[in-house]
Image (cartoon, rainbow, N blue to C red; front, side):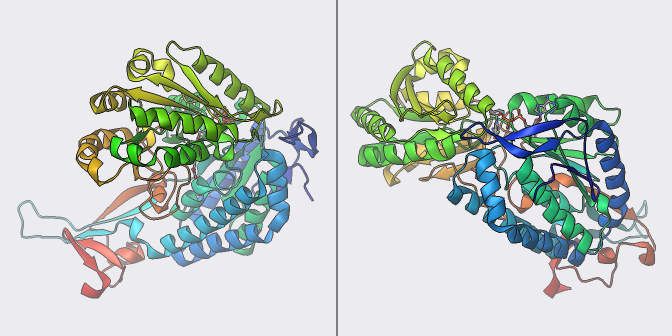
Length: 524
Ligand SMILES: NC(=O)C1=CN([C@@H]2O[C@H](COP(=O)(O)OP(=O)(O)OC[C@H]3O[C@@H](n4cnc5c(N)ncnc54)[C@H](O)[C@@H]3O)[C@@H](O)[C@H]2O)C=CC1
Ligand SMILES: O=C(O)CCC(=O)C(=O)O
């Protein structure tokens, strides 16, 4: 079924040389050979995207929504072939990938509803007042797509953060054409999804340049894509080094562009004393479950847990050791990622004050073995190396002498995607004192749950201050993500016939801001 070719504006192309997909568990090659996309492919995909942008960016919202829904249907129709290929390439289990497929099509459909709602256009009208000195002009504002977006597929979510993942869905919803740099760890999965979207593009009568997918192993491919003058913004999920390199490239362009990169986060979890006293064993088992989920390959992994030194903390650590003993080693996404995990663990274990709490079961070299370390608050504060993200099933329990030291550690941490408080009512006064710090540190604050697992909704923020993301003012999950790929335009004193339809006096948008007042449809 697979051709190994890249999708360049509707055309399936061979490239310059080939690379091989690898079965994550066995290390065996998976056919066919995959084409390395060329610089010419980048140039052609971007030129076609710029042309297609004129049509796709101007589509009526109902048609844009129809395209998103058809794309979701086409991915659904790939059925188990898609799941099986993603399982082989990523080593992730069937249940996880079935769930991820549901999330992927679900978010395309949610964005379709969001497109139709139109509230994200943020329509504003300020009527003219010729009697004012100086005369006040008529001003009408809406948000429009920024232009073609480059999306870097992530290795750890081969569906929900890849070819048709959240970045692609939100860029399409904003009205932007998309050129994807496919992740070389799952080229077959990428090709299947690319084919589904290409069919939706064609059946909706959209220009073929609306969507392209270029896979390859060479960083030069991603650099060429970010450098292309027709690309207007970038979405990325991956390593801190990769995100920083692409941000630098984007900033050095003749016309710099924004890069929305989600990179590195250790997601601090605080066990408040009242809750820990009551539920040490239960918390330990849930903690080990969260840190080892999906071989720990989540940017929301709870990489650091903070407690206050006590008898309950000792009980918690014993329970963590016991729970870890039963955690099977799980296949990691790539040999590079499992090598990086092993070396990260070795570095952490060698830091002054780090003590091993326990380990999971041992597995093959393709697997990640769960590890939990502990250190005191003062050892942690003495060495910034403790807060390096280790991508995999590991975490560190930091034992602080009191809640002031907990606050101090939180205050010293870099920006995070999430922060979590486990608490009972008796802890609320102390929790209230920590909240201002947590808000400064992260994009999402969680109570009595674990950070892994991100709901795709309207109020979700999957973002946070650097290095969690390159721009803490945005999110890569949920409908708010559309805002990354929009820019505002004001129309001053334009004759009504030349105005965008939704800004005319006879239009009835659901919500708009007229002379500063919010108007719902029923008021107009
Ligand atoms: N925090 C997170 O959500 C994630 C973190 N990671 C981290 O990244 C490491 C490597 O995993 P990958 O998924 O392969 O991420 P990666 O950042 O190495 O690669 C992601 C994509 O960006 C491209 N890329 C990376 N560096 C580039 C550069 N300098 N110039 C141009 N293109 C570049 C790659 O070709 C790939 O398509 C993991 O060991 C882990 O530490 C990986 C996935 C998610
Ligand atoms: O936990 C999730 O569902 C999303 C995590 C994520 O964005 C990531 O690991 O890259």
